[in-house]
Length: 470
Image (cartoon, rainbow, N blue to C red):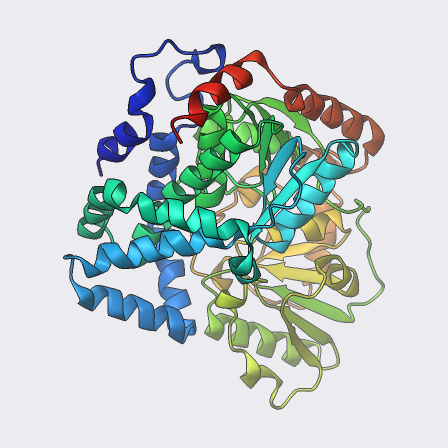
């Protein structure tokens, strides 16, 4: 896909101007519009994301209806118009813009991302932070009217780009790529209007809203701070780069993954997993078994696993936790129809459900990290979902214990695995707070963040130039 038509229209006014200090970087070391679009395109057109999109369409009738209508509309005027409508929806769902004097802006969309921003805000409590998210209730905000009119006024300029998208991709990838452009445009306007903003804080290095905001921030000479909200799939097909100025990671294993599989040009500080890390706890007997699910769940495997547990431990309680994103909820009601000792949940506080369990069985889910930090042994059953074996790289590194299914001695296997002398060192590489004093970690992370929240001369120069362009 070619991005030049859009990029030239967005940046043509500065093509012959000398670069300010913040723009004198090696190619690819900073976010810009082309990089943001390229990251989203590669992510959303991957086989894994394609499988997730198919799962969402299968489970959600509205998405299925929209996708069907889009595919039958043809690549003339209707499909680009639908993409433009999606861009407009993204712009007006962003908010709330309620602090005109904020020094930094953060974007988060899901609960774990919100918690991540909470942690960072606690590190720098004296910094005024504009916290944005994507909600339908923001549609009615007064500031959204001007944003909507500006987007409508840009339709002619971005139409060739949308026409190119519909010829290359299906609805969901096209919509996600188009939304990255929409967020870039919206944030460029925000940063031009609000001169007090000095930094942009993101919890994702691939979502359209995060990379769109990061590209707009770097364009304006602002700093970008990235905080990871989940483990990085070390063996995934794609590991997007972190081109932020500062990055706060759970542990050094995250940095190593980026260096091995991608790029990370940020100043790095380690903060550990959220919540309090607890030593591994062993019970005299197993009373509750957790089965924590992720995307691409295989219902037949879950059913077989529950049957095997029930045959071996008739009285044990089984807690099945769905993926917290409602669009990925798996219908497992058949499991509870004849067994009152099985509970199926979605969206409950994760820490509470980890504490409830004596052992937890996971597939290729980053929740395994939370369970281990919470002091509960994890059995990795790869067949629980449709992702490739050891998607997160936890088995390869010696972090989690792989199993082929339920067995009578599974608890003993887990105890032997997690009581190895070397295991705590592996765990600390993923969670820097595990078995460590958290105070020095927080102090170092706070100092790193503060360095990148201060305004720079480049910001003033870039913002001055951009105000007349946006």
